[in-house]
Length: 242
Image (tube, rainbow, N blue to C red; front, side, top):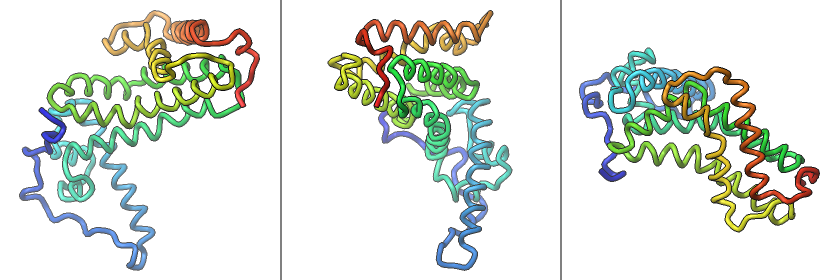
């Protein structure tokens, strides 16, 4: 199935639903307050969608169930999102907008490469082991063979952005002489992979961890040590990033 085949939700299509709420217009009085109400309603729908996707996955979720969980009519739901694919993409985008900036901000301050990588590793591990992240990961993996556009949407708004930001930072460090690699993109992917050892894999399989906090500390330290051993210059420990 190609990306162009990415379906809506035919079982819960707009046929026979109540009339959509009127579109908002910035030209009429009170438009500003309506925009606020519109955003609040959109967030209400996304919150309901999050619960339904978590319980039923993508294919098992219907627009009818999402409307019920969100406490809105199907007409209102379709006024905000044209189909289930549109809704899921918005859900992924929102989560990435909320969760990625604090992690990426760790590379925007004057720190040594080791300090920067330590903060980023901790943030990555924390993010990918959160319950919502685990649910999203399982949805993407289970549904990607049937709905490949789900994986594309997730990749573009999440991992791709994070990898590109880290790759650019690595390239900048190489120019400054604090690190060295002829392939910053590969190095960025390797760092993200190092951060996913032990804890992430076990949590994705619902396997228990005896000492999660200690494991997080060990994985963070190990990821940074291995990465710096491979790509760091000897004086990088004491050279702040400009």
